[in-house]
Length: 268
Image (cartoon, rainbow, N blue to C red):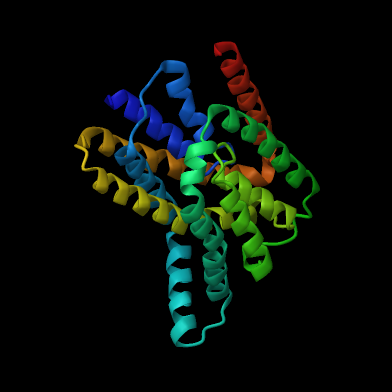
């Protein structure tokens, strides 16, 4: 992998990891349109590291507060809003963690196709539009309940289907449940941390097991570019989402899905 390829792929990953537009739909474009080879497991780990660092540093105050309150809830019986939110994030992570372990091989074998990605990009884009249009926009993340956290967690699990978008699925579920737009985004970003950490660890273990030779330059480019682009993406999205809503991202998803479907049909 060249440095240019690493830069482009890491930029795509960083920008699309936290936007509701599907990173997998974008990552097939270089291979489908430009004929680039698969980036490999080691590079996947690198961009996960960059994305995780971005969201943890951006929400560093919340991370410290939630972790401290979570520890206090176990040893001191802390029942603060931060402690409750920390436990809700853990609950919301469980469905994807369990189902990801069980269904990973099935998804790789049957659902990781360009046609599936094109279809889910469109279908879940329409669901995002419906959720944004009908949401009551009443609640913030601290007003989440165990039931709501679990529903959002299953939405995150559904995002294992390529093209769905993890952030898109979780924000869609949160909006359907009455969260306001910023709260839906913040809850989605906070619950991304354990799942990205788990995914990065899993991919890292697979990389070590393969014993493949690793070129360091593409990995370093991947880490730094995905970090910078993801950090900027989180900042700008939170600034804009309450003003512009989800419609621009819905339109983008529909256009991307139609483009991918047309490209695949014309190329077949």
